[in-house]
Length: 120
Image 1 (cartoon, rainbow, N blue to C red):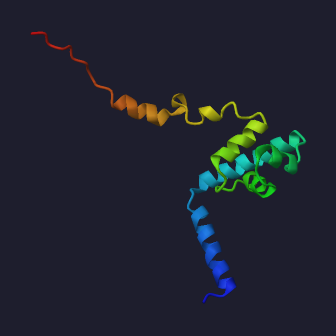
Image 2: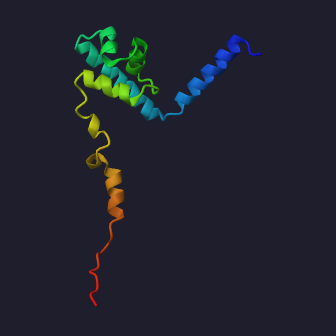
């Protein structure tokens, strides 16, 4: 039988491994987003208790979101942005007009010429 400390170490290693698989630039972006959320909340003078209550999450989850924890759901982040009045651009995150790579790839798939149909 595993000792409690060994079990805890195994669980922690699994948790850390699952979150360390995200790319470094993504981790940086999440930390910046979390920091920006915290700063926006503070500028509005909203306490962590009130913010957590309004969003329906615990203060612990709010703290994780403000630290950029990658395990926080997109729904939670979207709710926090909504409460802060910063949700207007959320729907445009993957908007086609900002997807230059996708647009370039779709342009490559367009036919080079279009032939008229033959009428017999």
